[in-house]
Length: 427
Ligand SMILES: Cc1cc2nc3c(=O)[nH]c(=O)nc-3n(C[C@H](O)[C@H](O)[C@H](O)COP(=O)(O)OP(=O)(O)OC[C@H]3O[C@@H](n4cnc5c(N)ncnc54)[C@H](O)[C@@H]3O)c2cc1C
Image (cartoon, rainbow, N blue to C red; front, side):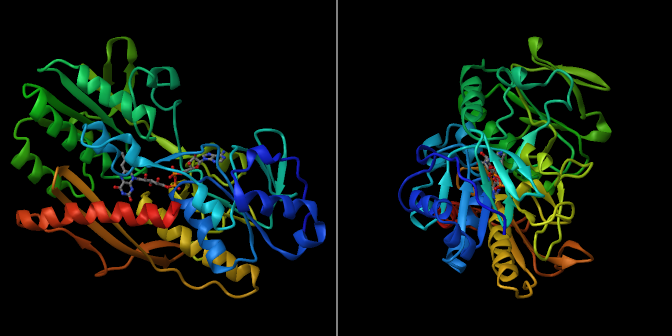
């Protein structure tokens, strides 16, 4: 085991048990050596869930969660915030209960990883030693992928693909726009975080416009031809928002190739589109720390062994959540939660010298197209041929012709899902 080195100050550790765990771990080499150390980078659905699960499985493990934000802002249901149906407060979660579970929560960003020394460098220059490292940094937006769309442009043209201030910016722009204006969404090619979420967003923006600015329209410029649950969305759009949502697919010339922020213009190979409100969802890749750790390949994502979530590129590192790429499993909170628990089990088994169990991951994704009207898609995924494959016959997609009571029930189930996943992750 590597020697532990602590230069982290207590001020950076969020309260309670967390402080004493870190203090003990670094003050006493003999104790440190007796307790395997797992460091988790990223306190979102994947990382926070994994840290808690590790402590639940084996309370002898020293688990440290490294996350710069003291408040996590959840993306699921953030489209409701954009549409003025929900407050951002309902999306916010803290780390106190995770700390109370005995996880050392360090409120800093991880700045580097040294896989040889097995250390994580923190933003303040200190370092943490690990036996196993879990990377769960989510996504980074590729501000180099669409000419004209960089971080400065995002302050004017929101992506709202990481929830928080960006979500509110898009909401304010919708509130400020004129009746009769167009809202244009640029949607990237796969893979990206939450495949159906752009279409849920278009639906809920149309809901807002229908009520407040009924002469307005939503234009989707899409870098794909087909999309997740397309028939369900398009049928619902005809029912609720006839003539309000127009989608231009890839083969119709919908792929946005650059952005002109000064004029709110989206440029495609076939023409330019100006809109009063523009929402650019840019291409994405694994959070930057994953590439600093050497865990990303040329796609920008992290290839993994689906049985243990072990990186295929760097030893003793596991990757979960949106940052990893492993076959059919989508980039969703639901999947990140399932991966978090399976990865925690695999790590606990590996540390105990036991063979990891074969994971079976289940996830459900709800899409709300109007208040009280939602549909879902669920799938079950298992390792096959070294990647996650969807198990045939084990999934479910809401039928296109389901009666309105079924849609209402699914909208209620979506609310319950959000409640239970956030309680399970953050306490
Ligand atoms: C509009 C929208 C709607 C969505 N709706 C749904 C839905 O209905 N259902 C669903 O299942 N999914 C939904 N998703 C997808 C879901 O939000 C993500 O798939 C999920 O958050 C992925 O979890 P994660 O842990 O990989 O990443 P995140 O939850 O983003 O967490 C990553 C964490 O890592 C931290 N981090 C990054 N870099 C570092 C570093 N260097 N050091 C320390 N910490 C770091 C970040 O601060 C962040 O807290 C939606 C997404 C969007 C954009």
